[in-house]
Length: 319
Image 1 (cartoon, one colour):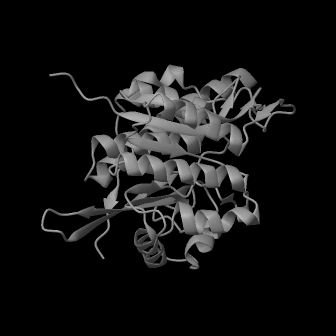
Image 2: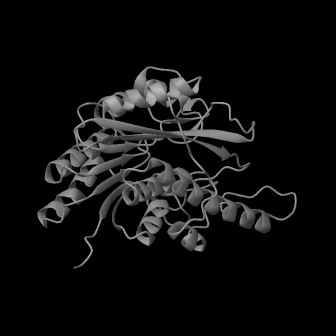
């Protein structure tokens, strides 16, 4: 009997050179056995951390045209939809419409959303997108299963926007994740919070929560905490890789958030470690690596993506 394929629709940015958006997500997902259909929300020469970049931005209408083509051929059955950074309201609303239509075709579809709302206390996305994220992407209008990964440091502003609550303690974080569950997502991962780490100030705290429907109809929640070593470098594309890996490992371990997070964070550790050591080698002693030198070493990390040695352990929270 042949194995059923698992298909992902990934709507993210594309770069000719380097790794961000779909370039960060597609290869790792394919390596782990997923079929990936990519729609490129932008096509740039490289990411915007370089001195120069050129390219095109896909409009909501153009997105709709591409989706219509898929639909006309009746090849619009997906198991997952993966989306990342969006700046445009009409584009985000079109994504929501597409996901809702795909959910009608497959009620088991899982939507994995990394909203990239903000970082280091400031907001990336324009204010007019906030209600769309709150009410349509995360909110009750969106029935069915989906994962939500508020991304990178300084997420407290984004989480406050979505839930109205500040996070200053682990208890606050759990309450925020519970609120997000009530709004829609079954799996929530706060990739890096500003909470103090038990291992000292060289570590970040990551928290996750997964709500599972039990056979008897009750809901069970598993919550985990991880201490993540800080890295003294700015990477681009790591959030997109993280969301893709969370999709993959929660698929392979559907009711075991602890293992899924350990696998996901361990992949990140291996890719980042390989990238930073290569970047320093290229830059030379005492020199700060440039954006091209800090591009993720994705292809070179293929074996770690497929079967990561577990170097990060999650603690299950008992509250």
